[in-house]
Length: 369
Image (tube, rainbow, N blue to C red; front, side):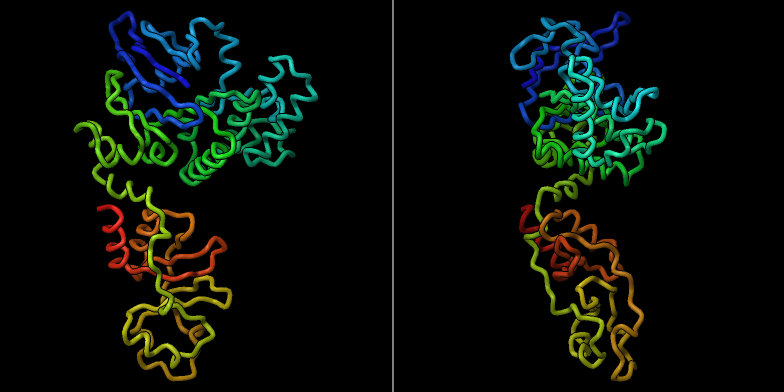
């Protein structure tokens, strides 16, 4: 547990970076500090490992005042991940990860063995251990940074905008990896970001800071989106906070229909009766993978005997996984679909059914009212 008690940071020129912060970071949870530039979120994080010394107030880890700890020893017991990974360019990937265990006196062979284990844990091929940091992509370097932070098995992990320097696709993958790791390791994580979507996705609790280093609200993601404390918080989380809130409701509550799903080896006459009642049919292959949408108009004047596989279909957009995705993912799928319908699949990508925007809207209303 990390406790801020009236912790503040004032600079000689009168700048207030953090103003009397009272906050408790629960053990085993991910707490996200979020806010605009100049709101004190990074300064607050750095007070935890004494990279920034509080002007007044206290910061405690498991009841112990951090000022009673030697800064170097304190930092060796706290994992720290920064934006650009901060790898040592003159050390191999394996030795970068082994840095802290070696500093703590772990024999080199054991430290490197631990580093190899951590590479696999964060999704890196152990063969990369012999490479130099410049030979890795940005996303791979960030994974090495996470592995290095975990090398001494610290109870606390500090992450200062660790994914902001990579592209959106890599960033999503790194977020997925962190969620997976946290489910397995249950570290006490303090994560800094300026991205409210990232905060909502990763955080068990979110601390929103306003300019001037003041804490505006500290709450669960759902509570933050449902009941922002004031106009600043409401503006920061965005006017589409209702859509973000859908991330907390599982897609498995949806009722999918499969009576408009047909395999592509069927003939036109097999589906005309359904097409007369539904403007769009979903064509799948024999493995139940989606092929595309078939509009009722595309069946006009098509002679009998023609198979669905011989007709031109409209791209199906992207699917959502019924068991693991949220209502937000289903809504996104429906909005981006040319047919205005979302395609739900199982974890193996097989189509389970489709849901229209009207049906989706009714489901959203029922779970959010």
